Length: 137
Image 1 (cartoon, rainbow, N blue to C red):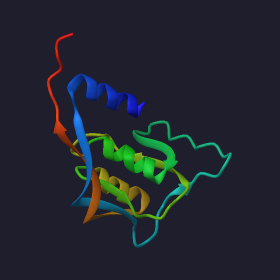
Image 2 (cartoon, helix red, strand yellow):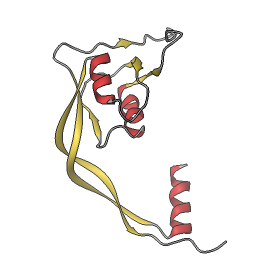
Image 3 (cartoon, helix red, strand yellow):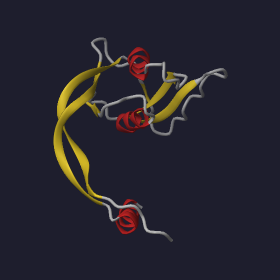
Image 4 (tube, one colour):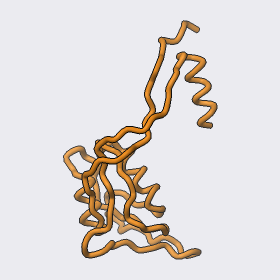
């Protein structure tokens, strides 16, 4: 699917990109000093249901997918790198309204015993070398 999209963008918009590595500000997601407060999903065990009046995020997934989800929601303004060392699948029950005024980082730290640490790191980025307006159909 990704290759098809790249081909479509290259053909329609004459898009030319390249990948490079840059040092930039990132957030490392680490385990807090008192340890993580996450419940690991055991194989074959069904996920618990959220409380009836629950408003927020509820996922059962691995840490890298959780990070991708909260990063793509637009509430985090820099790349987040997983430095937790947690490899299993976990239940993420996060009270969060999704409003811009809410701070997802504080919510994650409070709910799960994880910590965001601001650092600089080498990150792969895509750079646009050329793009054109599409021609009329």
